[in-house]
Image (tube, rainbow over all chains, first blue to last red; front, side, top):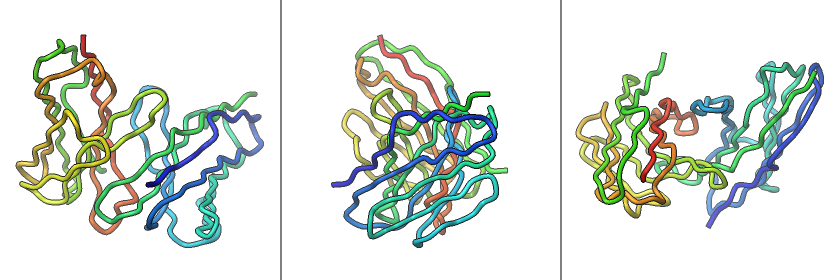
Length: 110
Length: 113
Protein backbone atom coordinates (compact mmCIF):
# COMPACT_ATOMS: atom_id res chain seq x y z
CA UNK A 1 0.00 0.00 0.00
CA UNK A 2 0.91 3.60 -0.08
CA UNK A 3 0.15 6.85 1.68
CA UNK A 4 0.87 10.54 1.40
CA UNK A 5 0.87 12.63 4.55
CA UNK A 6 0.79 16.41 4.93
CA UNK A 7 0.05 18.75 7.84
CA UNK A 8 -3.48 20.13 7.80
CA UNK A 9 -2.73 23.81 8.23
CA UNK A 10 0.11 26.29 8.10
CA UNK A 11 0.02 29.99 8.92
CA UNK A 12 2.57 32.55 7.88
CA UNK A 13 3.09 36.27 7.43
CA UNK A 14 3.16 38.25 4.21
CA UNK A 15 6.70 38.77 2.93
CA UNK A 16 8.10 35.76 4.75
CA UNK A 17 8.16 32.12 3.72
CA UNK A 18 6.21 28.90 4.25
CA UNK A 19 7.44 25.34 4.00
CA UNK A 20 4.88 22.66 3.29
CA UNK A 21 6.08 19.19 4.21
CA UNK A 22 5.07 15.91 2.62
CA UNK A 23 6.00 12.37 3.57
CA UNK A 24 5.08 9.37 1.48
CA UNK A 25 5.36 5.61 1.38
CA UNK A 26 5.00 3.78 -1.91
CA UNK A 27 5.72 0.36 -3.34
CA UNK A 28 7.55 2.06 -6.20
CA UNK A 29 8.39 5.66 -6.99
CA UNK A 30 8.18 7.49 -10.27
CA UNK A 31 7.97 11.10 -9.20
CA UNK A 32 6.26 13.56 -6.88
CA UNK A 33 4.10 16.52 -7.85
CA UNK A 34 2.83 19.63 -6.11
CA UNK A 35 -0.44 21.37 -6.88
CA UNK A 36 -2.13 24.53 -5.68
CA UNK A 37 -5.87 24.47 -5.11
CA UNK A 38 -7.94 27.51 -4.28
CA UNK A 39 -11.30 27.11 -2.59
CA UNK A 40 -13.94 26.05 -5.11
CA UNK A 41 -11.46 25.58 -7.94
CA UNK A 42 -9.48 22.80 -9.56
CA UNK A 43 -5.92 21.91 -8.60
CA UNK A 44 -3.26 23.68 -10.63
CA UNK A 45 0.10 22.06 -11.31
CA UNK A 46 3.15 23.69 -9.71
CA UNK A 47 6.07 21.29 -9.86
CA UNK A 48 7.17 17.75 -10.57
CA UNK A 49 10.34 16.20 -9.13
CA UNK A 50 11.85 12.79 -9.62
CA UNK A 51 15.47 13.28 -8.57
CA UNK A 52 16.84 14.09 -5.14
CA UNK A 53 17.68 17.66 -4.32
CA UNK A 54 16.28 21.13 -4.60
CA UNK A 55 14.49 22.45 -7.67
CA UNK A 56 14.15 26.22 -7.82
CA UNK A 57 11.20 27.61 -9.75
CA UNK A 58 11.42 31.27 -8.69
CA UNK A 59 8.59 32.06 -6.29
CA UNK A 60 8.75 28.53 -4.95
CA UNK A 61 11.17 25.63 -4.64
CA UNK A 62 10.66 21.92 -4.21
CA UNK A 63 12.92 19.47 -2.42
CA UNK A 64 12.96 15.69 -2.63
CA UNK A 65 14.69 13.00 -0.61
CA UNK A 66 13.74 9.59 -1.99
CA UNK A 67 15.62 7.65 0.69
CA UNK A 68 13.57 9.40 3.38
CA UNK A 69 10.28 9.46 1.50
CA UNK A 70 10.16 13.22 2.04
CA UNK A 71 9.50 16.34 0.03
CA UNK A 72 8.74 19.95 0.76
CA UNK A 73 7.38 22.92 -1.13
CA UNK A 74 8.98 26.21 -0.10
CA UNK A 75 7.01 29.35 -0.86
CA UNK A 76 9.09 32.53 -0.57
CA UNK A 77 8.17 36.22 -0.36
CA UNK A 78 4.65 35.25 0.52
CA UNK A 79 1.73 37.28 -0.71
CA UNK A 80 -1.83 37.23 0.55
CA UNK A 81 -2.88 35.61 -2.73
CA UNK A 82 -0.68 32.60 -1.94
CA UNK A 83 -3.32 31.57 0.59
CA UNK A 84 -4.60 28.25 -0.74
CA UNK A 85 -4.35 24.53 -0.23
CA UNK A 86 -1.20 22.84 -1.48
CA UNK A 87 -1.45 19.20 -2.48
CA UNK A 88 1.38 16.70 -2.62
CA UNK A 89 0.92 13.75 -4.99
CA UNK A 90 3.04 10.70 -5.70
CA UNK A 91 3.26 8.62 -8.83
CA UNK A 92 4.18 5.01 -8.18
CA UNK A 93 3.23 3.51 -11.50
CA UNK A 94 3.41 5.05 -14.94
CA UNK A 95 -0.21 4.42 -15.81
CA UNK A 96 -2.10 4.67 -12.52
CA UNK A 97 -2.37 8.38 -12.03
CA UNK A 98 -1.30 10.15 -8.87
CA UNK A 99 -2.00 9.44 -5.22
CA UNK A 100 -2.76 12.70 -3.44
CA UNK A 101 -2.32 13.80 0.14
CA UNK A 102 -5.16 15.63 1.86
CA UNK A 103 -3.48 18.97 1.29
CA UNK A 104 -2.10 21.68 3.52
CA UNK A 105 -4.09 24.86 3.88
CA UNK A 106 -1.67 27.78 3.90
CA UNK A 107 -2.98 31.03 5.31
CA UNK A 108 -0.95 34.18 4.75
CA UNK A 109 -1.66 37.12 7.06
CA UNK A 110 -0.65 40.79 6.70
CA UNK B 1 -3.54 26.52 -23.36
CA UNK B 2 -4.53 23.10 -22.09
CA UNK B 3 -8.26 22.71 -21.80
CA UNK B 4 -10.39 20.16 -19.98
CA UNK B 5 -14.08 20.87 -19.77
CA UNK B 6 -16.63 19.03 -17.67
CA UNK B 7 -20.39 18.88 -17.79
CA UNK B 8 -22.55 19.35 -15.94
CA UNK B 9 -20.80 21.63 -13.50
CA UNK B 10 -23.44 20.94 -10.90
CA UNK B 11 -26.11 18.30 -10.56
CA UNK B 12 -28.67 17.12 -8.04
CA UNK B 13 -29.68 13.48 -8.40
CA UNK B 14 -32.01 11.18 -6.54
CA UNK B 15 -30.88 8.01 -4.82
CA UNK B 16 -31.03 5.11 -7.25
CA UNK B 17 -30.98 7.31 -10.32
CA UNK B 18 -28.43 7.24 -13.12
CA UNK B 19 -25.86 10.00 -13.43
CA UNK B 20 -23.41 10.61 -16.27
CA UNK B 21 -20.57 13.08 -15.91
CA UNK B 22 -18.83 14.05 -19.12
CA UNK B 23 -15.33 15.27 -19.80
CA UNK B 24 -13.81 16.67 -22.98
CA UNK B 25 -10.17 17.59 -23.52
CA UNK B 26 -8.51 19.45 -26.35
CA UNK B 27 -4.94 18.75 -25.19
CA UNK B 28 -4.40 15.77 -27.47
CA UNK B 29 -3.44 13.82 -24.34
CA UNK B 30 -3.52 10.06 -24.17
CA UNK B 31 -4.25 9.75 -20.45
CA UNK B 32 -7.47 10.76 -18.78
CA UNK B 33 -8.58 10.35 -15.17
CA UNK B 34 -11.60 10.71 -12.93
CA UNK B 35 -11.06 11.75 -9.31
CA UNK B 36 -13.48 12.55 -6.55
CA UNK B 37 -12.76 15.00 -3.77
CA UNK B 38 -14.36 14.89 -0.35
CA UNK B 39 -13.59 16.69 2.85
CA UNK B 40 -11.34 14.44 4.87
CA UNK B 41 -10.42 12.20 1.95
CA UNK B 42 -8.75 14.44 -0.54
CA UNK B 43 -8.56 13.49 -4.20
CA UNK B 44 -9.08 9.80 -4.90
CA UNK B 45 -8.71 8.06 -8.26
CA UNK B 46 -11.85 6.31 -9.52
CA UNK B 47 -11.04 5.30 -13.10
CA UNK B 48 -8.47 6.18 -15.68
CA UNK B 49 -7.73 5.49 -19.32
CA UNK B 50 -4.59 5.58 -21.43
CA UNK B 51 -6.17 4.89 -24.80
CA UNK B 52 -9.56 5.20 -26.45
CA UNK B 53 -11.97 2.29 -25.96
CA UNK B 54 -10.14 1.13 -22.84
CA UNK B 55 -10.58 2.00 -19.17
CA UNK B 56 -8.87 0.89 -15.98
CA UNK B 57 -9.97 0.77 -12.37
CA UNK B 58 -8.39 3.20 -9.98
CA UNK B 59 -8.36 3.06 -6.19
CA UNK B 60 -12.12 3.40 -5.55
CA UNK B 61 -14.00 2.05 -8.62
CA UNK B 62 -16.96 0.43 -6.83
CA UNK B 63 -20.26 1.98 -7.89
CA UNK B 64 -18.75 3.70 -10.93
CA UNK B 65 -18.26 2.85 -14.56
CA UNK B 66 -16.21 4.72 -17.13
CA UNK B 67 -16.30 5.07 -20.87
CA UNK B 68 -13.64 6.41 -23.26
CA UNK B 69 -15.24 6.45 -26.72
CA UNK B 70 -12.54 8.69 -28.20
CA UNK B 71 -9.26 10.27 -27.21
CA UNK B 72 -11.05 13.52 -26.37
CA UNK B 73 -13.95 12.21 -24.31
CA UNK B 74 -14.12 10.35 -21.02
CA UNK B 75 -17.34 9.79 -19.09
CA UNK B 76 -18.07 8.66 -15.55
CA UNK B 77 -21.31 6.77 -15.02
CA UNK B 78 -23.14 6.16 -11.78
CA UNK B 79 -25.77 3.53 -12.60
CA UNK B 80 -27.43 3.65 -9.18
CA UNK B 81 -26.47 6.85 -7.40
CA UNK B 82 -26.13 6.67 -3.63
CA UNK B 83 -25.86 9.27 -0.88
CA UNK B 84 -22.20 8.38 -0.35
CA UNK B 85 -21.41 9.48 -3.90
CA UNK B 86 -22.12 13.12 -3.09
CA UNK B 87 -18.80 14.81 -3.85
CA UNK B 88 -16.96 17.02 -6.29
CA UNK B 89 -15.68 15.09 -9.30
CA UNK B 90 -12.65 16.18 -11.26
CA UNK B 91 -11.60 15.00 -14.67
CA UNK B 92 -7.97 15.38 -15.69
CA UNK B 93 -5.70 14.62 -18.60
CA UNK B 94 -1.97 14.16 -19.00
CA UNK B 95 0.56 13.57 -21.69
CA UNK B 96 2.12 10.11 -21.79
CA UNK B 97 5.60 11.61 -21.37
CA UNK B 98 4.77 13.43 -18.10
CA UNK B 99 1.99 11.87 -16.10
CA UNK B 100 3.10 13.90 -13.08
CA UNK B 101 1.47 16.97 -14.61
CA UNK B 102 -2.28 16.66 -14.70
CA UNK B 103 -4.54 19.22 -16.28
CA UNK B 104 -7.80 19.35 -14.38
CA UNK B 105 -11.26 20.38 -15.39
CA UNK B 106 -13.14 22.78 -13.14
CA UNK B 107 -15.04 20.01 -11.41
CA UNK B 108 -18.61 18.73 -11.25
CA UNK B 109 -20.43 19.07 -7.95
CA UNK B 110 -22.80 16.14 -7.48
CA UNK B 111 -25.38 16.07 -4.73
CA UNK B 112 -27.37 12.86 -4.26
CA UNK B 113 -30.56 13.20 -2.23
